[in-house]
Length: 151
Image (cartoon, rainbow, N blue to C red):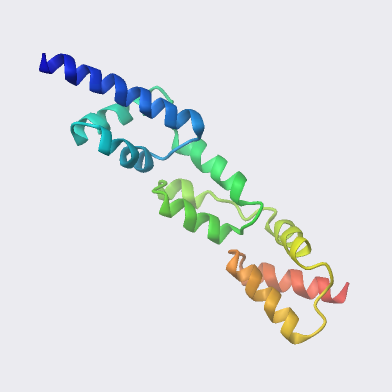
């Protein structure tokens, strides 16, 4: 009878995991954390997550690609890398986050926030801090603000 209850728990745990993955991609760490309260043991969770990974139903690569796509509308590469690290993504995947197109992204974000070019040093500093808080490198910020002020 105990074996029947345990197999029911595994089926329920798998269904819960698939529901979570149907909503959005997860990292292994996130999925294990969300399933742990509903499992009888951590071994059951780790076994299930390993099977999901083998069947490619759980993919950190897909999670990282989607997360980068979503965050790149608002943030620079440094902030995106920090977010991926905090989610438990493999450091090798985090290292692949590209700075390609970062100048254009920073320009678009700055233009959405500020319509007119910075006139005073105070306005320029405010925009620099804004872009810095969004995870853009100082090189990108200086390029963008010097080009925007002269043009």
